Length: 557
Ligand code: FBP
Image (cartoon, rainbow, N blue to C red; front, side, top):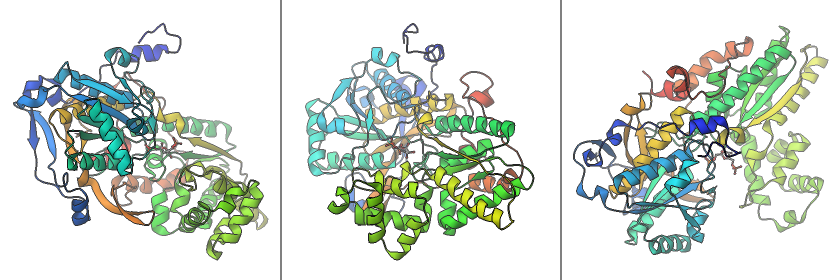
């Protein structure tokens, strides 16, 4: 990195010198790393069906790298392809750096080719060579801009064939896919396809997503979650201080996390907001939107009775889809409107709203009617390439502010509320996805990439790079690989049973949720906000090397 270059901050220039830590087993000589193989594995459920679908890769053992004698073939030269898939997550560049450094350590002749713009780059054969020179400016930085990312899903036989031909023509024998649950499901399918068709290409995945929902017994946390939640917690903590200073606003902060509420929960554990909604709890209790609004208004009202007309409410991005009547409404909108040529022709929001009302079932019409007009319009405006409602773009924080305001006005008329309510909406999402990785993510990502290079060298396919024991110092982390089929189950998608890596939702019986549930009443009533402050790269270890609270609670003694 050239510190004089105008778009590099002094902090970035300084940070580029950081040397990420590695598990001890991988930091020594290549000849002294042995591959330890465990027992055969099974998928988490639907074993017979998954076995049938993954005939060539099902049941492989878990593996780990331990001190010992390396196999002679470990340093055989390989050409490796890399693709970044899905949403950005802090630390992606360190995965690339770890993968590159690991490959070069194994054999100087190894090469790494980045396919551009996500999985579509594999089909379109758009690529670039990753070199030391290129990497210099990217080490320890956020973003995926080194080769770009994308959300194209490889699904058809033709696409798989094209990828095979493109990679084989380039002499590539391994592909590393950096992605979340969907992308790694895709990696498993590709691994099976290549093996089944006797292609030499092996596939290795890396667990990425700020959402934190790619985790299980074997994968302690996905990369990017730590940094993104630290950024959101810093911002929410600052808002807390503003609250205490101005004492006049209720801040409704929607935080990213397309489905699961891990981000919201982690931010709550860090910041102690007055309210944090957890989508999984809403679904479990089958709460209606009306009941949720009631609960929120109740907290606002109780605080107002103590002259505390201010507060913070954290709202998970996926909330609406977890409210049963909204889930039904969204699914009806997806079914009826997605492929309706008549609807496609409509331009004016009012016409769209009228059309939707006409086509919905009575129950869903009621749910639609209960939403403010602005939200009705949003539900009908943004659709993904498959024609589905883009729930992540709905301004849930504004919906709640409007609905709570309406309720409190009614309560005022009835003499049940005599405070003030002024809401401010925020959405913390993109602000955290490309932040420079925390020390934890910098080390974890580098280790995941490095481990992937060893999995490639060991000739394995259909594995997810895994680095475990993350509460210990990095030198004591354990590096290895988890068979992708081990994490799979069958799920109903678009009317068909599909093999997918199971998404981890917030476990309502788990320690993080319980810790939050034990404290939320006092957080609602008192002012207990904390200020986590900005990510620290240097300084006391309990600050600079802090791990996510949820990880600490889940894996701690
Ligand atoms: P991944 O699951 O691909 O990691 O992406 C997660 C995420 O950041 C969600 O939190 C958010 O809903 C979504 O991406 C936004 O995606 P987009 O970049 O397409 O707006």
